[in-house]
Length: 185
Image (cartoon, rainbow, N blue to C red):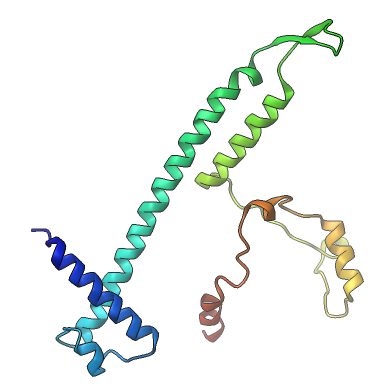
């Protein structure tokens, strides 16, 4: 039987207090954590894990809803511009004279951008592998390279994902904790 609203609120408040104490570095066997109503340090640990899993599941559900909403918006925009991008129409010059038939090139560009956005949103594009190599395809030596030479290498290689930084938030350092774990192994 599902827990009552009051019981759910009590559990949420207890878990919030537990998280607050743990963030301050209070160990699970401390009397302040046990005073929250946990029978043992193991019970407190287990409840913290449950709380984190619940939040992860709720976040995943919210992300899924967001993706669905954005996908529906992209569908509506694509549906609106599709006819101009796919059906030939009369083309007139600036003076109003008929010059032929064709599709609206700007609409085609819009369709392509909408499709690209959808692929990014849904994770349909596979990551691009980029490799720099030295002379003759060998290893690239960086032990005696100055800043000017590095800039030349970057200019020669080009940006593998031009415009990518404009749409994505800066995540530099977002995974520093995970990197620390890898270094100690």
